[in-house]
Image 1 (cartoon, rainbow, N blue to C red):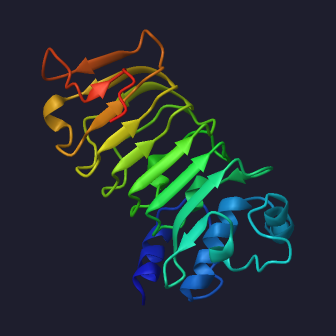
Image 2 (image 1 turned 30 degrees about the vertical axis):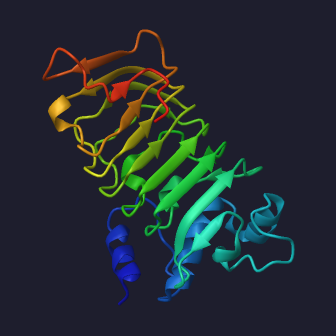
Length: 228
């Protein structure tokens, strides 16, 4: 059994949605994940919906997800990257992101579920960008993929307290600009050594950065527009 199928087996135990097992082939499983990602409620009209949203060219082979616009696959036809900007008429079910992805880039994409559960992000993810996607509610950064390096979640509507005390050791950048965050919880000694910047620019003026182990917060955590 391939590593991909081993991972699928483990996901079946925790994923809150049923997976239709249409075959043992990795490529077919990729199709299943992508179909549920873009058409969670209208699977019978997949080809029409993909063409209308311009994810697939008219007359193209919509069953080959590696040919969809903005999708990159490995030589083994495993979805590795998705880069979508303002996909017209589509809602995306984040819970069905293919599990071996290393990059996801969504700009102005409407999620089916407006609360982002970081537990549902692919565990192999290295870079995650979901900007202007209308996410709202609290944001738990304690369950991020352990290999994640960059997290861009700007211009959403996250609120509440953001906890930075249990981040992946690989993380270099966090961008949470333009949200509605009330407070940021920091323990200086528990920030990843790799961290370059955790930026909270353009959040409410009353937002607090609370440090649990020092009087002064590590300067890498900032509300200023620092670009490096």
